[in-house]
Length: 170
Image 1: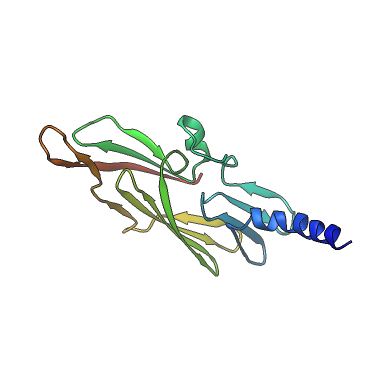
Image 2: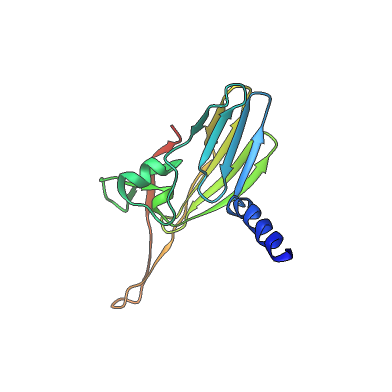
């Protein structure tokens, strides 16, 4: 009997453990749920019960191409060095570190694209009947990242990534 109760308890706790990285903020009208590892969000209208997702639900692992762009709450157009051709880089298609801070009315997130040398601050706010996702004026930082030491010259080289465009949640 004790074994069956223990198994039942474990089965009941599995959904809670799976959502360990999900945070909820609410007001009179809306319920906002944010995953702090992907910034995937859902907004639920408390009156109608209807929910809206921020993007397609992210899959586990790194995505590529248009799937990464569509699943990402943040994407960048960047150039490297003297190039004039932009490359699109997304949160779901890159190695990122997210510093997430939950607030009473939303969250702040600092997204560090570690391989690119770009940090982006995001402010996610739950308002009376909507949500606002913004990047503050000082919310973009570009910094050099080592590419390694050239074996022939012995000189270390660094990234020269410049951001040309920022795409936030639709």
